[in-house]
Length: 170
Image 1 (tube, rainbow, N blue to C red):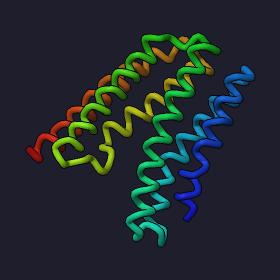
Image 2 (image 1 turned 60 degrees about the horizontal axis):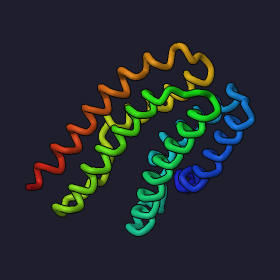
Image 3 (image 1 turned 90 degrees about the vertical axis):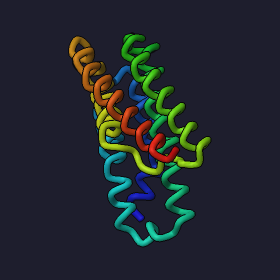
Image 4 (image 1 turned 30 degrees about the vertical axis):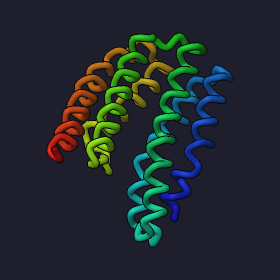
């Protein structure tokens, strides 16, 4: 039950991050992003251990809500950071391209009748690295570009893994 609550509170956590960025309280925003990342890690783990994990409708609802919530949270935070913290467009572009390619692979999976159900570890780690990149930009801006390497490498590996999963159905 607590895992589902963490998923449902994701919009509130995202709003808190956005408020701190808007208010130029960057250390608090970095802490709130870290909290959002921790909640994202544990919402699925705790949900799978709950009684609700046996109800297919709730599992599907939580999964869709979790994925959509993650994407909206990432995009909203990074876009606001572009305008309020001068977050570099090239860092955002790498994440945007990764998200667009992932969307195309997911849509292809639905098109051929083999939709992806679970994220792979490389893709999860790439998303985690994006969160770390945002935190780093807020507290140590000069170091954020270093995280472009894990975001790119893990993102590419995650996309390849997704594509192989989908393509194996053909």
